Length: 309
Ligand SMILES: Cc1ncc(COP(=O)(O)O)c(C=O)c1O
Image 1 (tube, rainbow, N blue to C red):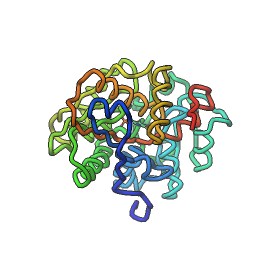
Image 2 (cartoon, rainbow, N blue to C red):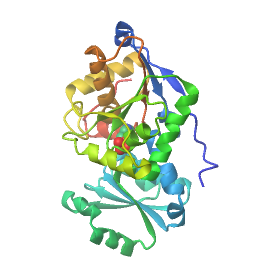
Image 3 (cartoon, rainbow, N blue to C red):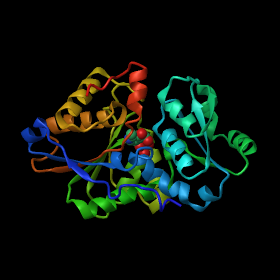
Image 4 (cartoon, rainbow, N blue to C red):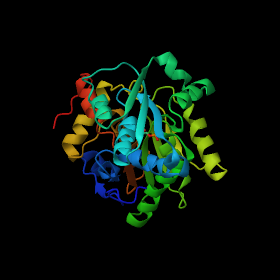
């Protein structure tokens, strides 16, 4: 199904040049999944690949999923629907707004959008809600919020397999939302590299359960990983002043575009750990650039963050 899609794999590596890394003798390299595809970039492509191309995804009448008004996941799903000629439906937490750049893209890609309140959105896991979706869209394939699934882990494992051919490293870092990316990267570690995830959400200790249950389902056991919970920068979708400043500075120094909601927090956290002396000199750290750059337009639109370029 996805064979004729122009995805740039293996995604290339870019070494980060930054004075703090020089000071502590740390080498840091980005795995550039942001360059995979303009619409299906970052971990979105990795997570959706096996989910959508599986038998159920292919045979379905449409793809239905969930997310907020600025969701990277819905953005990618809408793009995939357009590319593979499949109807897509987004159940969206929030209100319709014709000027929201993410929603404009969803409409352009032909996604049908249903806007629901926070309360209604919470019911998305209830059987009755799923039955209602099935009644409205018979034969629909439901993809969990954030692409959380065992099939998604298979796509994440390919990042690790590519890295095995590309570089010898000590630590692999990623941003964490639903936990799928971290679960998949950790589960694929044959060589037992240390894998660290940085939660973009506040009070996210529940993620251990999400990550471990995916791993158990996939591999029958739990693979080692570290989950940092203190670098959420005020909570999901928020950008604290220090994360905003850090992100601006990082982009200005390195020339690599990142957004503050996921990767800005991850790098802020990683650099803080480096400053605290938590990595020995000569440690080589790979950071997964998980994309999400479409979100910059939405942040600017809401006046939450303007990236100076
Ligand atoms: C840009 C970006 N990075 C990282 C993540 C975290 O991924 P996961 O939900 O698999 O933890 C997300 C959310 O999917 C994201 O949009």
